[in-house]
Amino acid sequence: GAGVSQSPSNKVTEKGKDVELRCDPISGHTALYWYRQSLGQGLEFLIYFQGNSAPDKSGLPSDRFSAERTGGSVSTLTIQRTQQEDSAVYLCASSYSGGYSYNEQFFGPGTRLTVL
Amino acid sequence: DAKTTQPNSMESNEEEPVHLPCNHSTISGTDYIHWYRQLPSQGPEYVIHGLTSNVNNRMASLAIAEDRKSSTLILHRATLRDAAVYYCILRDGDMRFGAGTRLTVKP
Image 1: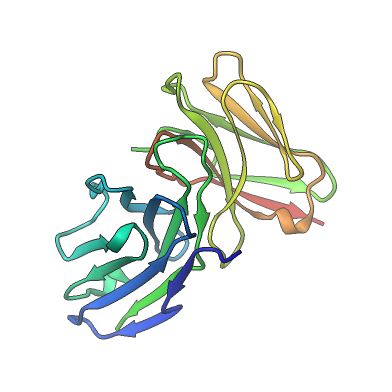
Image 2 (image 1 turned 90 degrees about the horizontal axis):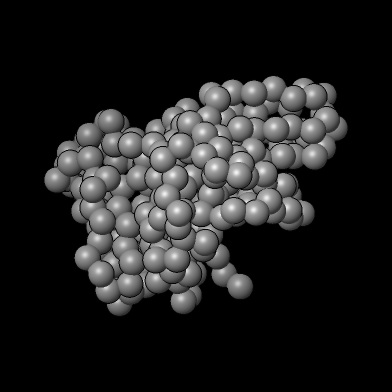
């Protein structure tokens, strides 16, 4: 079966432009997570969606970052007025249910964002 | 805030066992202990998880202390392909990764 997919795989943009990153979770997975990973660093939690509940946005680094999840499936992470420090790999993961702590996460391949 | 503490790096020789420690002294009764690893230039992948009892799967074994305040991921025979960053995470809804342990495997 299909795993988590992300698009685009690579994105190069100019400082100040807006970007949208897409995540298609595994079908039937109710929990969806966004992380980012700067070069040589660990994963930084950004946001977490669980079913129809209000998302946990506590990891978003600034109000330039936002995310939506439409219909409980596809998610889009939007970064407005991009800055060079936003350059990183953005990873999406999904799990069958975030509410049950035994469920493993499945990660997508990531989107490498480069802000010039 | 990270809920787990791991050494920054460890080294192992190929075909020898590796014991990767993790401290989680603030673990709650419902937290599962998860381990993931991230190979170079890839996203993280699930390795193993457990609650109270030791667990084995085809990739590794997980030994959990009786008080659950620490655990150890055991790779029985390290290979060069096991070189990765290993993350120990307490799973309680969201999942926040710490810095992990960078494992180097020497031939």
